[in-house]
Length: 500
Ligand SMILES: Cc1cc2nc3c(=O)[nH]c(=O)nc-3n(C[C@H](O)[C@H](O)[C@H](O)COP(=O)(O)OP(=O)(O)OC[C@H]3O[C@@H](n4cnc5c(N)ncnc54)[C@H](O)[C@@H]3O)c2cc1C
Image (cartoon, rainbow, N blue to C red; front, top):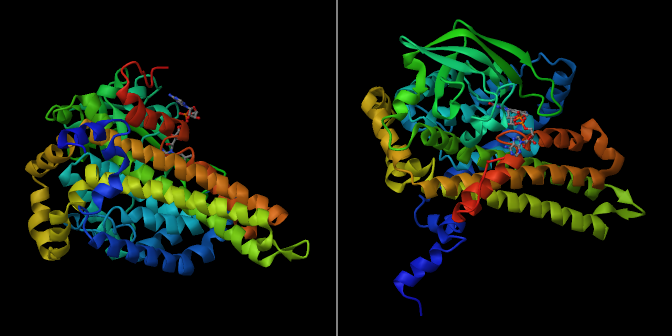
């Protein structure tokens, strides 16, 4: 019927089989243990929602509304006690080493109860992911172990990511755009490190974090070729916090301004810089883009899961309302118009979940989680005694050889089509999930009428919280363009993307 070479040829046609069937490809290759771990973290999240999130979520929103300087340390300490800031740090770096893909199912659960609190936990992993995507083994090990120590001592050690600048948001998320943006965060190379001047804004958890992964540029006229990633610790001379934004939603999670004034960052805190790009096979610009793509391929799936969670939260509020409210002599749930709306909302949640789950498969097969979810590594790290991780592997990670090996495997080892597949899917999951979040919140308010506007009904808070998701982790417009670039435009030579 079809020969082997025909099969290959037909499967290479658009849409390419490998691009659209990540889950099918993954079924036999991914370790079974990830199912057990995912079940465990979903159950854990549900328990945490019952005991911590739901009883406090409306109160936290109101507290920050009344006192914008308030910081949710009480919540962060609780999440720290429950072990959430190390759950997804690999065991070789001292963490609990849960499979990365389970995190999005976890955050969907928390987001279904409170999106602000989901971000208070989840955005720590945006910092961890950015640090990890530089594949600087020594620094990943150092900061991860500080986080683990912070958990042990009850003194949270969170990590934020600082990339957005007052004049450049979308532009810094996409290396093809960064040269057109108004970037001003300058890292001047000096003896022994860098001196940084500039400001970063809208940094989630900024005021609550101990470390900040800072993206700066060593040449402001040509930033795409000169991206520098630095680790900055609180208390470093020349680094300070500015204002906290007063924003419409996710109020519990602060969006902070970070200020750098002649701030010296020693070489030992340089995660990656143009000198180090030189040791890799791609150009400096391509490597900077690859690092960012590694990060957002994971974190955009996570934000898609936030969207799925808030879409589910809104659905659950509307369902509860329809089950207990009478309209024209019968329960709202027995009006067909309400049933079709609830079915539509359920569909929005289900489709969004499929989108982020497929992205997880893509990352497990071709991206960020590939090494960790490769069966031999997966089972080896699960059997690895803690003392070997701490006493044998940890000192080895401090050696330059560990970093160069990790970079060779992960940066040089990833093909362009794998980058496009994971990045394209992540963008899709991000805008599908977050658009569904806003849509379901609006539908919940439609179903609930005036009752939905009341603060204690949660639906209006869900709507305020969900709107922010369409903006961060790359606006949904940017993500649509990125999907077009990665999975549509790449096959047509006449197509130009990000040229306007
Ligand atoms: C609650 C919140 C938390 C955040 N947390 C963090 C964080 O932890 N760390 C961090 O670094 N940043 C964070 N951000 C910043 C966030 O990543 C940016 O807001 C986002 O990238 C958009 O940038 P901008 O707001 O400057 O919008 P702009 O870039 O000014 O965009 C304005 C509009 O123009 C559109 N647009 C811009 N350029 C293009 C283009 N080339 N093509 C098509 N359309 C375009 C955008 O889609 C948007 O509609 C956060 C933002 C929010 C709201």
